[in-house]
Image (cartoon, rainbow, N blue to C red; front, top):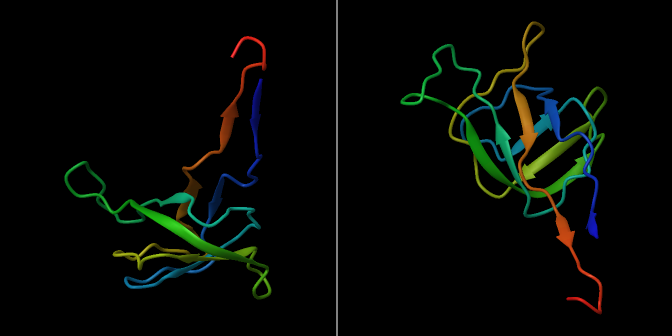
Length: 111
């Protein structure tokens, strides 16, 4: 059988712009992400190519739900981000959960 925890909002958008060196990102939606999970913060740079991308993988330290009005979650990261990721009226950078937790278990007789 297969077992796992369902993580909700595996994909959301930034609520506020992230600046280089920030270790906290504000998200539009609540998330139930846990410490140690990896996320991707997608580039908002005008130029995006394999040689020059600004996508960043980060590790969740912890999450605070509804930290201020209009923000679903604040995600504290283990390390600072290197690039700016925009969130304004017209466009908000995307953030996705990369880590999943799945356990595959056979029965006690045949395993």
